Length: 127
Image (cartoon, rainbow, N blue to C red; front, side, top):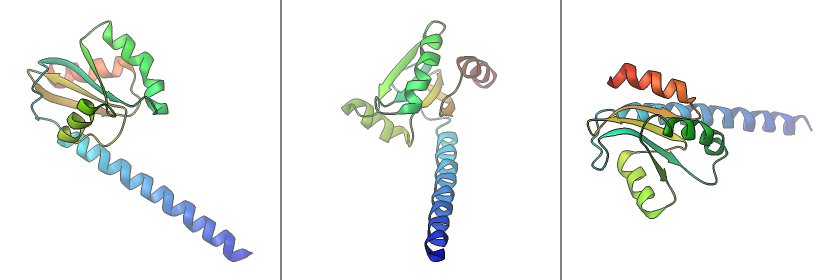
């Protein structure tokens, strides 16, 4: 019976390490998006989401607040166009929110982020 506990502990530890490494990769790829050109938006936010994503549902009220202040284009990663755009930009996780200025990605946010932080950090980065 002790071997079962050891196995379950190893399995849980392996899963946590995998999640941690995956998060690091997602953040690194998000930072690498800076400087990429977006052909259909000059300034505002691109919000990548999925209807099935629990974190995206939590992010929705923040996006609604953001829409009251700045242009926001919502992109469902499971739609044909959204899937293509997400692949083109290297989006690996939802929700991902990109700040675009002059048609160039200035900042990428991964996960649930408050509207105030999106605005303040975007203004710091892109003016």
